[in-house]
Length: 462
Image 1 (spheres, helix red, strand yellow):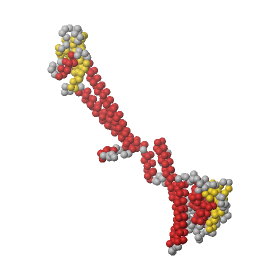
Image 2 (cartoon, one colour; image 1 turned 90 degrees about the vertical axis):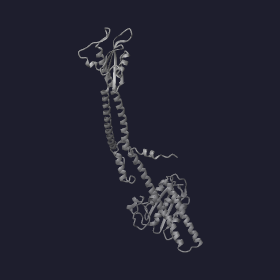
Image 3 (spheres, one colour; image 1 turned 180 degrees about the vertical axis):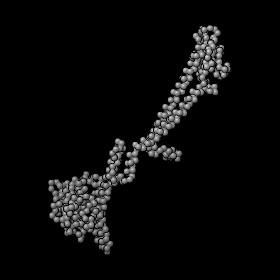
Image 4 (tube, one colour; image 1 turned 90 degrees about the horizontal axis):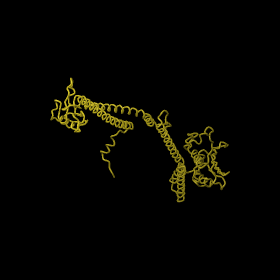
C-alpha cells in the first residue's frame, strides 16, 4: 500500500480551498500567461526595431561618408568638406587594404579597428556586432565600381555605440513588467469581486439552508432572479429535498404504525405474564400461557412482515387469497378480552378475499380494535361478497362518530376527543385505509349507520 509523504500532503493543501479563491487564481494564471507572452513578443519586436533603427543610422552615415570618397582617380582620395567632423566620428575608410582614415579613439591595432578591417575585407554591404567593453554595431559598404580584381575601389565602415538603445530596451522591459504587475493585480482584484458577486446567490442558499432545517422546512432554494445555472441547481436540490422529506415521512409513518400495531400483542404478552406470575400455575395453565405468548409473538411477526412489505411497495403485488371468515374469527379470538365486549364474526364460509391472510388481519384489525375501545357490549364483523368484491363491515354499539369529526377520521394522528380515556394514537384507521388501497380496495365510514359506528372494507374477491 502506498503512503503519501507529509511533504506531498502539505503541498496538496497549499492551494486555496474556496471556489472563489480557485477561480481567481485560475484567472490570474491565465492573465499572467497572456501578459508574459505579450511582454516577450513586444520586447522582441522593440529590440528588433531598435537594431533596425541603429542599422539605418549607420547606413545613412556610411552613405554620407561614401559621397566624400573619390574613386575616379588613382589613388583613391577623400574629399574634404566644410563640415565633415560628424561624418568622421567612428568611421574607417579603406582603399583596398590601405587605411585612408580612422577614428582618433581607435588606432590601427585596436579591437574595434581590427573588426572594421575584417568587415571591409568582404567587399560588400554588411553589418556585425562587437562587444568591446560596450555593445558596438559596425556596418560596411563598398564605394566605387568593381575593377578587374572583382573588388570595389574603396570601403567605408561606420561604428555606433548601442548602449543607449540597450538602455531604452531595458527601460521598456522594466516598464512592461511593472505594467504587467499592475494589470495582474487589478485583474485578480476584479476577478475576486466578480466571482464573489456571481457566487453571492450560492452564499445566500447556503445561509438559508444553515439557518433553517432544509428537510423540515417548505422553503424552496430555487428562488427567482438567480442565474440559470444556479436556478437549475436550486431546482435539483429542491427535488432532492422533496424526496428526502417523502422518505422521512414514510419512515415516521412506518414507525408510528409499527408502534400502534405492536401495542396490542405486547399488551397481551404483558397481561398473560402478569396472570401467570400472580400465583403458582399448573402444567396445563403454563402450557396455555405458552400458547398465548407464541400466538402473540407470531402476530407481532406477521405485523412486522405486513407493514414492511407495504413499506417496500410490494403489498399491491403480493399474491395470495384468504378465507375471510376463518381469518377474521382468529383475529376476533385474539382481540376478545374476558371482561370486554363480545366480538362476533358472521358470513358465508365461501367468502374469499383476494389478499393474503396477514394483510387482511392488518386491514381489519385496527377497525376492530377501534370498535372495541368504544363498544358498550358487542362488536360485530360481517363478511359478504357481491360482484367479485369481498365486503367486510365492522360495527359497534358505542356512541358513534361525532358528525364534526367525520372529515378527520382517516387523518393520521387525529382523535375526536384525546381526553376521553381511551387509548390509541389516531393511526389505526389511516393505516387500515392505506393498506386497503395498496391492495386495490378501500375503507370507508358508513354515515348511514343508525346507532354506534360502522366501517366498511371492500377488497378484491379471491
